[in-house]
Image (cartoon, rainbow, N blue to C red; front, side, top):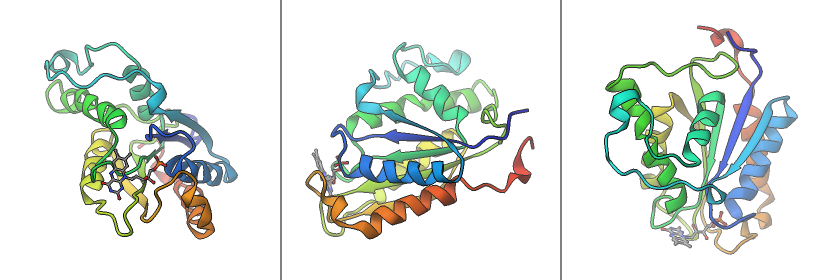
Length: 204
Ligand SMILES: Cc1cc2nc3c(=O)[nH]c(=O)nc-3n(C[C@H](O)[C@H](O)[C@H](O)COP(=O)(O)O)c2cc1C
């Protein structure tokens, strides 16, 4: 049984620091903090995470055999009640750094469906997580559908529902998003809502 405290993990998935998606993520996390959640941010580009080798080593015990920063990120995701992934569109999908972490999450799939070990609840004791996808693209009306499909799969292996999204087009240069106060407010508001939970699910 967990402590019931809502933990929010923000995954900054752009290799460009303090760019458009990280700015939106910061507003989202500020919103979550404003309603009392414990928030943490991980910058994927600062981690050392190799790609999946398709060695099927995880079919033995559900753990990835490649030892790098993925193991810790994986634990942080499992601990959290809300997982917010913020990453820009790169060729209508996600940057390679964050895609490597997503591909490595195949071990969670093997753990559940091959080794048949159920995913543990969050640190707070909740059986399922909330997933939020924040993205930006330089095109005026970008195609987010490829990235959304990938993120839904990623959230799925961690038993996170695709709970919310904030997809912003027409922002390209670093800082473009700052010229749109409405979208920054939207990010803050999404953070407050994502971290406000109906606690009847704890421990079930
Ligand atoms: C390698 C690369 C690929 C990109 N591919 C796309 C794309 O497919 N569609 C799009 O709308 N924007 C694309 N962009 C633009 C970024 O999505 C845009 O600049 C975004 O605001 C960057 O977010 P960030 O500041 O958080 O890094 C691409 C940028 C780079 C560097």
